[in-house]
Length: 270
Image (tube, rainbow, N blue to C red; front, side, top):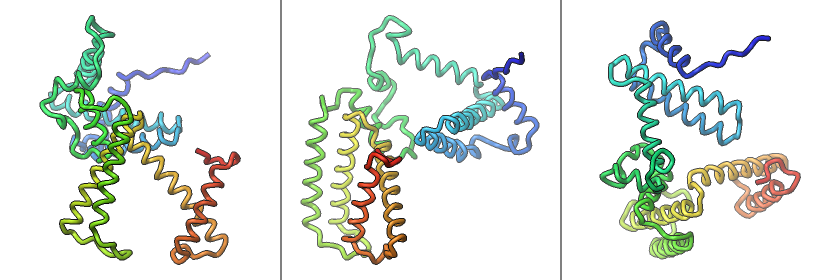
C-alpha cells in the first residue's frame, strides 16, 4: 500500500529557493515587484472565503503562503532575516499576547496589550486600508484603552443623533437636479462632514454589535446586485425598458424580486 507523502513547510521553502535559482521570472522579482501579487492573492483568498468554497480556499491559501515564502527568501538572500526569523517573531508575539496561556500573568484584552507598543492610535495601520476597515480598527483600538460604550445602546443613539444632523444639513442645501454635479462649496463640505460622522457612527454600532461593517456591506452589496439582476431579467422577459421604466415600476419589480428570493424554495434565501 502506497502512502501519500505529506509535504512540510520546509519543503515549500526549499521549492521557493529552487525557483529563485532556476526560474528566470522568479529570479527577477523583488519585494517591490511582488507587492501587487500579495494584494491580489489576499483578495482572491477573501473571495474564496466569502463563497465558502473549501477547495478554492485551500488553493488560495497556498498562493498567499507563496508570497510569504517569496518575501522571506528575498530577505534571506539580502541577509536581512530568514523565514526562521519570521516564525520566531510570530511565536514570540503570540505568546506575549497570551500571557495567561504561556505564562503566569493575568489575561488582558488584546487591544490593551497592543496599545503598550504604540505611540498613537494610528500607529501600524496600513495607509491603504479601506476606509470602513480603518474606522473599525481605530474604534477597536480606542475601545482597548477604555474609550467605548458599555453596550449597543450608546452607539445606536449616536447613529440617530448623527442622522438628525445630516437631515438638518440637507435642509440647508437646495435640492440638486438629477445628474447635476455637486457644487463644491461650504455647504457641500459641511454635508460631507456630517455624512462622514454618520458612517463612522454606523461602523461603531456594527462593531459593538459584533458585526464587521465591511463584511456586512459586502453582503449587502451582493444582495443588491443579485436582486437588481433579477429585476433586469424580469424586465427583459416582459419587454420593459429599464432606463425608461420609472421608479414606480422598478420599485414594483424590486418588491417582486425580494419576495421571490425570500420564498422558502429560493436557493438565495438569506
